[in-house]
Amino acid sequence: YLNGESKPFAPTQQDYQKVYDEIAARLANETDYDDGSYGPVLVRLAWHASGTYDKETGTGGSNGATMRFAPESDHGANAGLKQARDFLEPVKAKFPWITYSDLWTLAGSAAIQELGGPVIPWRPGRADKDVAGCTPDGRLPDAAKDHSHIRDIFGRMGFDDREMVALIGAHALGRAHTDRSGYEGPWNFSPTVFTNEFFRLLVEEKWNKRKWNGPAQFTDKSTGTLMMLPADMALVKDKGFKPHVERYAKDSDVFFKEFSDVYVKLLELGVPFQSKPEDRFVFKTSE
Ligand code: DDH
Image (cartoon, rainbow, N blue to C red; front, side):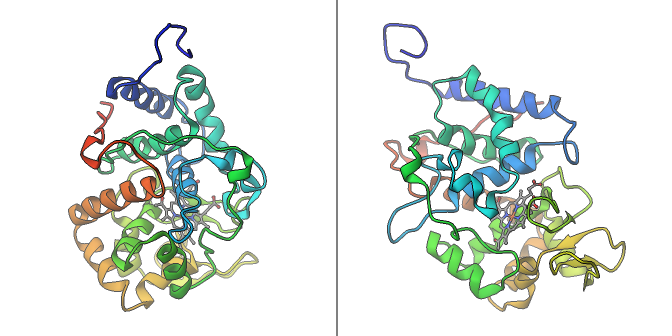
């Protein structure tokens, strides 16, 4: 067996907490990256691993970690996520009993908590698949598109309007990179802290089309240093989405609660758990 003992190793919540702690320690130590944290790109890895889910066919989702393989690793939407996968390799080496699918989703949960976000209860149960499990290209959202595209993509995963808006609030974290998506810049001034700033700025700031040679994106009138994607702006143009943007802009607690619920749901799409929802672990955040 993997742990060198004669009985099969059945990891407990404590064992998974050790994995969490290792990820948290690496996040604290590896600050020579982007805005000082790998956290945002870990959140995106967990999302892109999960967001391929199709409720009709039951295919895709976090169960499989098929982004390890081409063609899925080469899908345009996944550009840059090798940084996140490589960041987690030493964790996998230290805890070889965890599947990549569990590790990537646990890392998403850990990153949100370590960056000051809500608790993201998590449970194990994902198995890795081989290259044959790769999902077709085109299942993740296209930033150049509008509200109807967002509803198509997230509707296919089984989410409603409120859940779609809450999920996209993850754009409080991180930034766009010209060498990955072609877009450029952070959504707010604290891209390594989980907040409701994305929504507040979406509502309160004036956003103009950026004048540049890159893809169409928006920039804030006040400083010209922040950005919104066309798909972000769709959230304030659409009647079904906008009320939720306004609720989250006004009330950070409500956003944290609703984000936690929907991110948990995202990470569990299509996973054949033996455990029950009430068996989820709540990990201790580092000091
Ligand atoms: Fe996103 N996202 N995302 N996103 N996303 C990008 C970065 C990050 C879209 C497009 C982009 C979600 C939804 C959408 C994060 C989390 C989440 C980038 C920039 C693009 C483009 C990539 C780059 O250049 O590095 C679109 C379109 C949608 C949509 O819904 C219509 C959701 C649901 C999440 C989530 O986590 C639940 C995070 C975090 C980042 C920052 C990554 C980084 O490296 O920093």
